[in-house]
Length: 497
Image 1: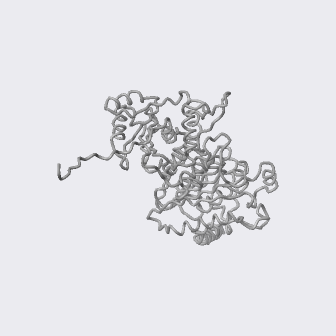
Image 2: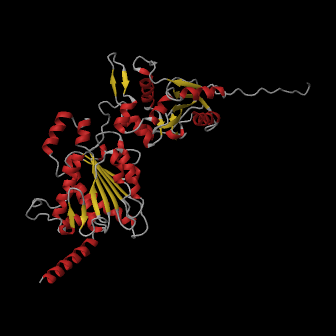
């Protein structure tokens, strides 16, 4: 009898495996088949995913079909991001993805994370455990608080939760599946540090890799913002989920929010409509101002001087960044970014800046170079002047402002840049976009605008605003238009002379 029961279980598993093979590129079909929709229990009153969830699963299936992974040749990563309001089932969607991949791809490997340890433990991973128990083939898996794995393959076919603390970034490294799928799921991804995403990218280089990011767009910076609304969205399957269209959101609560705050308020934009704030309470440069400058045609007048701004690194993790601007055009000449470890020796920067000042850019030389006076600026500027370059001005960010509206020189330069962005053109580099929208501000007792200190910004977003400060330096002072070249005078020779 025992042998017969065991054989029956084996037969059942073979039937399940055959069925699951049909869902390799059909995650929606899997979700509808794998869970007891409408049956007595927790899903008694549900017939399946709501409209947004169905659409997402359909698009995921299309992404799989488009790549035609043959089990050997690496394919382009599937990258999907959804920004949403509150209560739209983000963690449930994450659980379905985990169950689908784990059920249809032998010896896959996955990592699930969230913005906080509490969110990961009590919501995201809790949903993975809950929905795994609901699978009609739940006996295939063990799912504890530390790991989910295929029975009998704990070390080679698994998915695990991992906190997103920056010091834990190595937990996201080394996840490769050359003949299967390596996948990452980020819940509440708006608050996950960029360094975690960067390490995860290393696991998307072979096999059939996938990465999913879900979250509430609480800020106009970071990975979720860039992939759904910013400079990286062209590489991602991106979308926005309005909580008013979700079957799971509390519609009465949403109606109260709209009544209290207004539909166009940032509160409703973020928590209901799934859109980033148009301008955070303390955000100095609004996101829409940056977005418009990225799309605007780059124009300049023939006599507009070419101005360069150099934000010098002190040899640490920051970059030394040089940006160029000619009138309303800060896009045509690419920025120069030099890793901090290469700038510990001032001679390196002397050589680089002398090259910048010597060469032509689109037929013009740099009229003026403004340099942040902190750190190694003094000896660098002094040596450049010895070499004959007189068009250099050192700028002290903490000096008095040239306009009483602003506190200190740095606030003044950023203020001038903010006004210019309404007519200027910039490139779509992720670093510049995030830098420009990162600083907050407040008013001093004298009602002066005081920009958020650089060290505070670093603590908040994980890096210094090198690109933003370099462009801001081009507004340190007015630079006179170029003088037109005088035509050469030639002697007129007449026949009688």
